[in-house]
Structure formats: C-alpha cells, structure tokens
Length: 248
Ligand SMILES: NC(=O)c1ccc[n+]([C@@H]2O[C@H](COP(=O)([O-])OP(=O)(O)OC[C@H]3O[C@@H](n4cnc5c(N)ncnc54)[C@H](OP(=O)(O)O)[C@@H]3O)[C@@H](O)[C@H]2O)c1
Image (cartoon, rainbow, N blue to C red):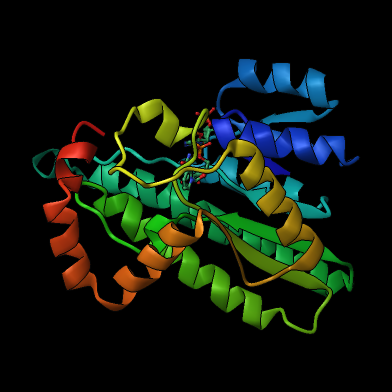
C-alpha cells in the first residue's frame, strides 16, 4: 500500500514498486489521478481522506492485508502565523502524523500477532531535523514522525516486522517542493523523485533505521542544524531563507 500515491513522489514510488513486481494498493483523495496510475501499474484504488478518522480506520484495516505499507502522504503548506486556526492545526497533524502513526502501529500489531513478515516505510523529510522559517507545522509533524519511526524501528528489531524512515531533502521535477517554485540558495543541490523511490526500495529490502535522499552537503547541514539550531537560524537569516520560502 502506498499512501499519497496521487502526488509527485507517491507516483514515482508506486511506479518503481510496480516495476519490481509489487501488487499495489494506491490511496489518496484524488480518484482520477489514482485511477490513471492504477491502469499503468495494475494497482487497486482506495480513496481515503487521512484527515477523516473513519477513512483512516478503513484504510488501516485494508493495510493489514498488505505485506508492506509506504506511508508517504503529507501536506506542506503552512499559513502565515496570523492565519493559523485550530482546525488547520488538526488537519496537518492528522495527515502528517496521526494517520501514519495509527496505520504503522496497527500494521505492526497485526503482523506480530500473526508471526508474519511486514515492512513499514514512513516518508519524513530533512524538515524533521532542521527547522526553517514559515514551516512550523510541517517541521512539527516531520520532527514527530522521525521520532516515532526511529523508536518503532528499535521496538521491532529481532521481529518479523521492520520500520524505516525515508527522509528526502529538496526534490526536483515533481512533488510539493517542485510545485511551490521555491528558489534554493546557490549551491544547494536537489534529488529526483526516482531517487526517493529507490530510497523506499532500500528501506523495504534492508530495513535501516533511516534512509536520507539528499546530497551529502545537505545532510551534513541538516545534522549541523540539529546540534546548533541557534547558529543555523542566524545562517539561514543571512542567506535570506525566509524571503525564499515566503509564499509557501
Ligand atoms: N517533494 C519534496 O521535495 C519532499 C521533500 C521532503 C519530504 N517530502 C515528503 O514526501 C511526501 C510526498 O510528498 P510529495 O512531494 O509527493 O507531495 P505532493 O505531490 O503534494 O503529494 C502529497 C500526497 O499526499 C496526499 N494527501 C495530502 N493530504 C491528504 C489527505 N488529507 N488525505 C489523503 N491523502 C492526502 C495527496 O493526495 P490527494 O491530494 O489526492 O489526497 C498526495 O498524493 C510527503 O510526506 C512530503 O512531506 C517531499
């Protein structure tokens, strides 16, 4: 099962898994995009809104019948601070954090009870390590998802089930970053949707705690920021990161 299969990265992940012989369950809200992808990949479509608890319960039930779940769906756009509402906060937490947590936990419980193998891949972000201006809810949920995934990974060591986080940096050509038309500081390199798909394959095949899909210098910068967030904020301010991300 691939959540967020109608999106830029979800499509690339689904195509790569189908190319390798997977039988896919493709899920998201936009049925027309899923239907086209289903014809191409010979997959099954399940329409579900991850901000709707009934849909998440239904999808969680469906997921237990799969061998692997790729929890890739996510939403990125943060509002200006003065436009934030409690409903908006709930929606981002539901889609980016609550739904993948519920699905991963239920999937693991089911597979462990059955003594059957299972693979859980959670798609996080380098925004789960480094905070930037104007991305507060995205950062909050991706930091949370990383903590959940790395802890679950440890809980499942030595069992028939494994969990990994795939953490992309900036992805070109398709997906939320490419569509937002954000200008990167000079010298910052991107990766492709296919690189993310191959990261998901690595996670399924080798089950490491975390797979980064970003050039080495960006991974190093993210790790530096996690240790020295104050200095990171100063550097970002001098590089004009807030100006580049405004309008997201
Ligand atoms: N693109 C990047 O540069 C980048 C970098 C780091 C991490 N990521 C992560 O990669 C993942 C995929 O992102 P993307 O770039 O492919 O973004 P995208 O093109 O915007 O796709 C987002 C996907 O999530 C689904 N989704 C959003 N809200 C949903 C909801 N309420 N219920 C069900 N599905 C929902 C969308 O489907 P519907 O709209 O059809 O429901 C869509 O399939 C996300 O978790 C994102 O945070 C992306």
